[in-house]
Length: 274
Ligand code: URA
Image 1 (cartoon, rainbow, N blue to C red):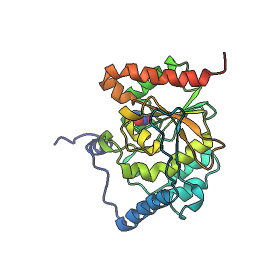
Image 2 (image 1 turned 90 degrees about the horizontal axis):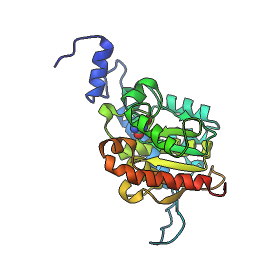
Image 3 (image 1 turned 60 degrees about the vertical axis):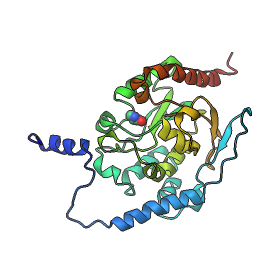
């Protein structure tokens, strides 16, 4: 094991290898942390009403339930997120949130990029190495592809808003676990409420199954319109899921389907303009 070099490089090497906990001088009550995560999940589950089923072949979107903020337990993510009245407050709340250990291994809390006034809000999975370094979402190789995908339907970071379901980089770029995503969900729902976009695009299976509250994989969820609903939204937001740019970099033959999905978004955004 070669770990010679600058202390920062050594630390980075450990983080890349998946070491996400360090031993500090102050004791940490892991049971309390676990209890907090369980409270968040219980509060989200309690407040989530079942989404009505879409009849096979039926036209129109399938509504999706979102956590109701009112019933949240004080100190939980749901309670903290519900108390944020602006995006600036939500960012500060996330930066101060201690309910997820992923945060301690990450260099940044990656909040968002782009234009919060935009019609389109894009949601990915979690920051990668470059995003963690810069503190911005989708600025690494998959971000370059995302920019090209958005450009193909006439969008860029001045006409789209970009964030992730998890704002902290999982060690060694692993996928965030469903529990980690569940802890972050009240913040994501509040984020959507505060941006109130005309259309949501979900990139990849993690964002799709979390926000559509469906067990199906991205292959089944992509290319169909759903609705995201939440008590803080004036009306449900149309949602479309598609493949994650990182998957498209590994599987270029899937780009054709992703292109079709983006055309659906374009059509929806420009409907009635002609
Ligand atoms: N992948 C994501 O899902 N989000 C990012 O910000 C970067 C890579």
